[in-house]
Length: 204
Image (cartoon, rainbow, N blue to C red; front, top):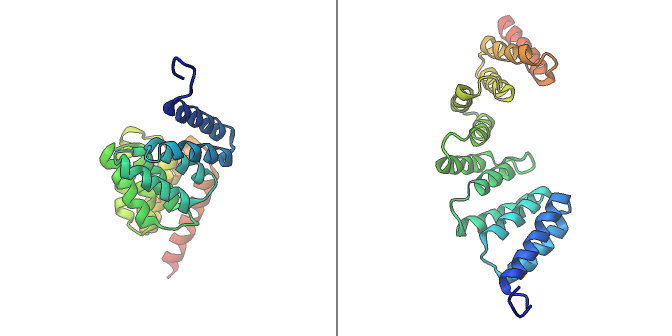
């Protein structure tokens, strides 16, 4: 607000943005989008507003709309690490099933923040999903160098090894997880699947 008490252009955008962020936090994404739309009427090229609108669309599972707004934000701010990661998450959702496109997003994110564990994990998952198992394992290995007890990564590496037919090695990784977390359902299930696959290969 200026000295005369009138609301300025920036005050309006800031106020609407704050309302939108509160709505996002409260889980009311539709209201967040409405406030962001009002703010974007004033500042249509505000990369932060476009990014936050994409987030609300993503939370609403409106992935096509989210991707559109992540792209708009990235055209203005091409160094937005979060936009690349979140766009990749939209693309890799099973309802979208666009793992190759998602992989490109995670690679872009890693150019901005090399060796980020989250982006590496997502890149590894995408590589595994498109059958590039050895490259996926390389991603998981990079994370395990600094986080050797990260059970989700150990499981993902075991799964990639299973996909390569290296069942003995995969079982060893699932056993490592079960040493840390004896009740880990996914490790138990994947270990059993690897054991069954190894038996089938032996009998053939």
